Image (cartoon, helix red, strand yellow):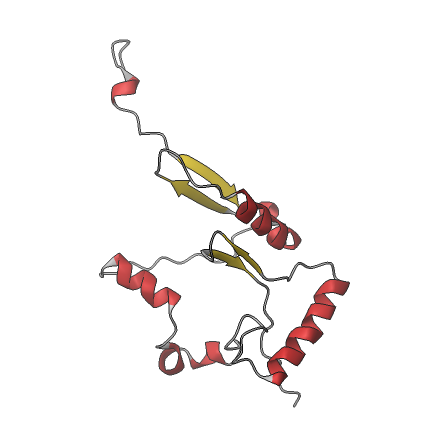
Length: 148
């Protein structure tokens, strides 16, 4: 590059960025909405995992020949999981909040048991809802494996 090259004419536009829990949050707005409470919650919940010192164990790449919005929607819903991923449903519970009126007494008992365990291990678990219900964090138990 010569001395006459003007970097300001070719540089990227600045954007607002925050990091938390190994994720990068980017906001293109001139005045980004506050996310401090969410970032603090996320850092607190992920602290036991020491993600700054984590190593990538496996990496894979999938190239989707599809509309990215459909791919993201597929990732966020699980209507297809019963037929396509039955092994996943063997470990997950239907609810993530023991205040859900549909939750069963067995689920609430398991949550109570696991919360006592998490409390004894100083692992965060309390349900947090932020920013008009746009962001939530909660630790939920996996289904207990049957004892053979």
